[in-house]
Image (cartoon, rainbow over all chains, first blue to last red):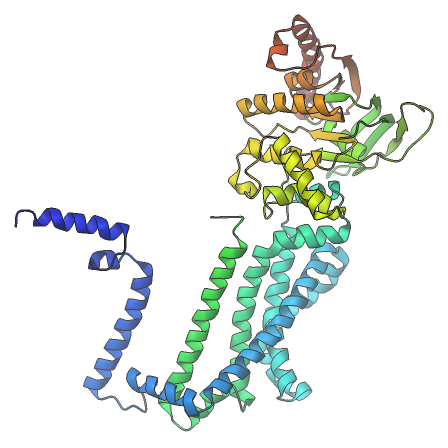
Length: 276
Length: 272
């Protein structure tokens, strides 16, 4: 008995060194446990309170029912196709914007004439909420694939262009001189110095741009789509299938988590020469 | 490194550039000098005398507004040859931070299209010449200032330039690191027999490395005097005990002191 405090202290030291599993206070020091734990707690409170208060599932379905609805949607409701269609629309438009935006940004940053021309257009179009372009784009392109691609492209390209310009302009002039000294041509300076040095800034633009692309594609699907997560969300709402609405929202939320965690990982990898 | 035959001549070179205030600033005026092949020439002078500008003109990054540059072979002093190959070692290192030591050193060779095997062999040789073997896969961020500049020197040497341009190469380093690197560079230069132009603030650095020292005046930069450094080689920190060393040091210091005083008056706006 007299040795117990000592044993307890040893255990704490061991846990800190190996895996903080059994000590609850250590668990709360782990940000991952804190993050997932609070989500779990939130769901439990939701489930229990909805059950106790007897809220109509029309307004607030219980998490367990939402999960069942989600599984059913995936199994025989075609949600897999909706997800695939939405992802394709987002990433096709975004991919085009990434290539075009980086090239355009480098061009603007390396030529004051191009900058002078582009400046006014960017100043006018960048702050414009892209969602306001949906009616015009529908008139021009209809509601099919080209429309979705364009809306996703427009959402992503401005942040990418603007951040590329900033990144290239912030490149240390000494690095450009050093590359010239080592025999680099103008084109090699762009490819081997300006773009690599701008990559952290370009990636910051990618982050913003992809977020806007997701918002715009889902919103456009809600307005005109027959397929896609946005369309599914809207249709489920109209027929008061609240469980399905929540199920689609969960898919969107998980998509958001995957995208932003993926970006974090890419960020760390790209910045390995800056930290770590 | 090839022992170059090509000498560089500055013929009454002047450089004037417009200042922000609108009037013209004379950076260099009437500079007439020769840089002999296989020799180290140091350029020393007060801050803002146009030392680095002179180096940029030699490299071809700046065009003189008056006078001209001529390259010729010492065996045919009347003729003219194209600009010899040059590499710069920078005061601020200017290493590419997203490339490893190895990738920084092979950068120029890669641009030149040198095959990979040869590239790697030459880079390893240059990296070991500056005592950085084992650090090939480090990023510049992971190196100390002195190590960074050794990468800078390796990156310039690997190009096997006819002329090595050293722009205050140790200006950003602490005093002890500087001493060690000066000694290392002195022995590298002695064994390679390369032509080198060294821009520096430090009389000691100039005396340790140079065959000839050009002392420049405060702005506008002119040549005050050219001094032959007849100290025996190989030179090291022990050279500082040579009686001639003190004589040369005092002579250069005497010249510089007047110019530095004048530069301070100009900078404070006390005299136009």
